[in-house]
Length: 255
Image (cartoon, rainbow, N blue to C red):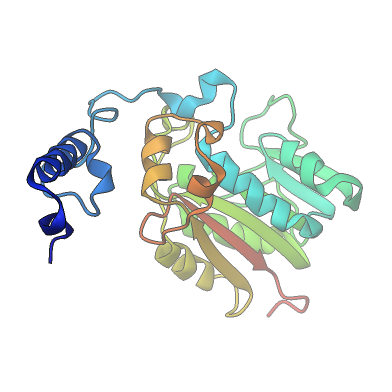
């Protein structure tokens, strides 16, 4: 029974007018909105608000909010001899005094911060059974032969060593990577789990995801984490996997 039935006619008309105005001007209050009424005024553009993930602003991109949160939660595993790709910023930030040796891997000779020039696909140039922790943030998606790279990572980990891996799910093209190394893949919890299961024994890896429809839209538009509220960032919807996060450990007695 409609509550407006008991409201005097003039006030009833006023209530209905307000309701119509609200539905027309603030349609996100309707859950879900009817077809064709979804609120797209801010986002209704074929051009993103910012390109290149918002890097040019100097702020923290939305995916980095999840990546850095993952590393912080697992910082106790960043210890001993640690390998990171391109630079060692996360090794130093999250490993601190637990790190006894920090190595930086790069595929190109002459990279300024590199201590190891090597290839994750072939394993050339990278010592085996050497690293207590390998940090790979948004790297595997640039490598076409992902399976070979994961086999190399397993080989270079010391027994008992840990891989901390993050990869993109829903994302724009990384234009710089595509032009220099490649932009080959996007991952889901399903594909990541299957790939890890080919290399690491069952029970030796965990896969989680972060993201929701709002964070994905914001990320695609190049908005920054600071432009969203904490509760919006922390709401997790497994149907909108913006970032895939993996923790994998090589058994102490490797099979």
